[in-house]
Image 1 (spheres, rainbow, N blue to C red):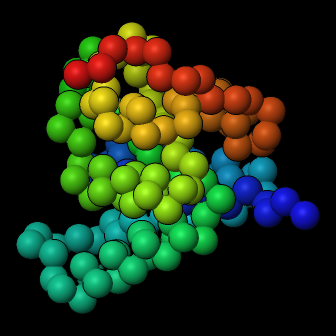
Image 2 (spheres, one colour):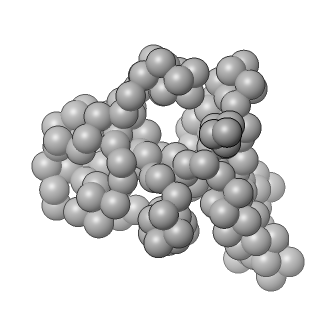
Length: 153
């Protein structure tokens, strides 16, 4: 019997837009009865106290191990031509960890299909989901991610 879809989201959660995107994905998963996990911690102190760091690391690694797939948010709102120009180090690490464990990695962006993306992130993914409508279809099992066809940087 196939395992039910369980999505672990990896993304930076440093500003309101990033947090809202994660919350919206969670809401879509809840509406579609799809398991959702994410290590987001919204009440951050800078620098991050060690007790938060340990919990975040464990939440990310265990969430990836338990997931049937990982969804990485690779938006770069400051530049419509380049996705993840300087990818969040934690997000990039988590995507690589999932890839190494052979957990399928998918990417989500609200930016144009022609934008540039880091070669390791692009080629380490099974496909890219463009926009909220496509994401809803993918989560519900209707839509299929597209292979990366944008430019590589």
